[in-house]
Image 1 (cartoon, helix red, strand yellow):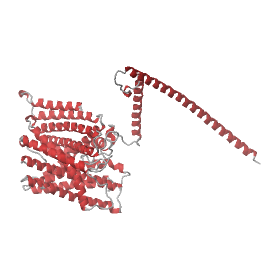
Image 2 (tube, rainbow, N blue to C red; image 1 turned 180 degrees about the vertical axis):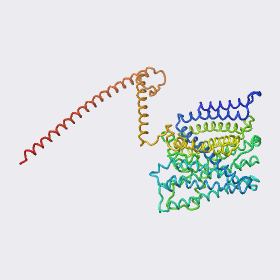
Image 3 (tube, helix red, strand yellow; image 1 turned 45 degrees about the horizontal axis):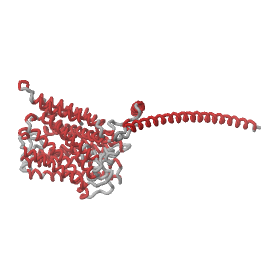
Image 4 (cartoon, rainbow, N blue to C red; image 1 turned 60 degrees about the vertical axis):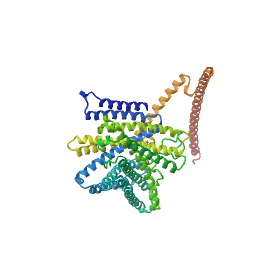
Length: 600
């Protein structure tokens, strides 16, 4: 929107002005970082107010989805970083690269197992079974999203540490080997846990809806984990081949190397992003079945004609109805899939996710290299804020353009589905941008404290105590339900307090509607309902206005007459009811007298 664009432009101008301060009053890098963070946070927050109240309900939907995945990624990264610091301090201080890989892989397996067990508990497979499937929906999405992100970053860290070993880091070709190795490793892990879930579900001879929900949410999370892993490893190889320098396992480069990339290297990385985008569009367009009614969630009420929604675990690629792109299985069936069927289905889903995330990663690092070439932005915190705000502004602008294209009647289901996949990729790009900024902010704060690990632990505790509950209660429901359409949450309507609240809202709306109708009647009717006439036909307009007033007056009189008749009928019915009651009383007395007469 225009307001948010103006705010982002103001932030960019402020950053430049602060960096160009007079030499005798030149701001320190810390002052610039604080200023950038403050202004950037306020600008982004105000921009979100514009977007969450946008006139187009689809933009409101996309905004809530981006906020949902951004907050969940931030919480996941902060919690993973805290635990990872503990692991490094306890087990990895001065160790070999091979031991580092083994420890990081064990760390990832702990989160992977925790994902299986916790989702089983949430879905009622372990412990008390919930009363309805609706009870577990929000909890399953909450824990599935957080643990998918945490485990995904742990997987990136594990396979990334293997990629840093001398053999694999020797050449880009050797580094590329990590991609098939990590795919096979993650797939075998998925296959093992899927078999275990199937055996648990079939222990009583059949599967319940809660066991199917457990399998569905866990498979989505596992696919997200593999998608994150493969996409990041691919981008590491692309960046290595592009600049002949392999970034560390977190994708970071020293500022001197980051700022020293040539324009050709920057352009080649942008070209790689375009290749990812074209591949993603081709796979979506030619592989997605052209079925009407299978589109995206914000449409279906006269805008696009497509009904189902996409959302998944906050990763653009899964769907809110529980299906991943490419055909996600609907829970367990009593017949177990063969190894090759499972391989084909999972490979397709993961490939779609990897291309989506690969495009987002590639755009992120291309933009980072581009901005790092500007001397004024060669500070880690300033660069992170400038990069994130730039990504957010451009991404939301492109999302708006793509949404307008999808609104056209000329686009069919295949084109719409491809557009929605691109929109999800752009939303993920925004999430990655803010994740890197949060990570840099935490690093900057902890590095200035004597005990950085304690600082990260305090921040993680703050995240768990304050941010996660707020995200679970107020942001996640907006993204996974239809509440984004009207801009507020609707809780349990069986609750008397909630019923009273919405009764007051309904009364307020009715009062506003009456006042609006009265005002329109006084002004001679609603001008917006008139048909616009062409040419010199002012007389006809006046005639139509007078006719409208006459008809409205006649209608009001007719309503009064009907009201009077209704009152008369009500009075008559009341009188008849009273007469009937009187006659019933008389009949009772007659029966009593009859009994007395027949008594011997």
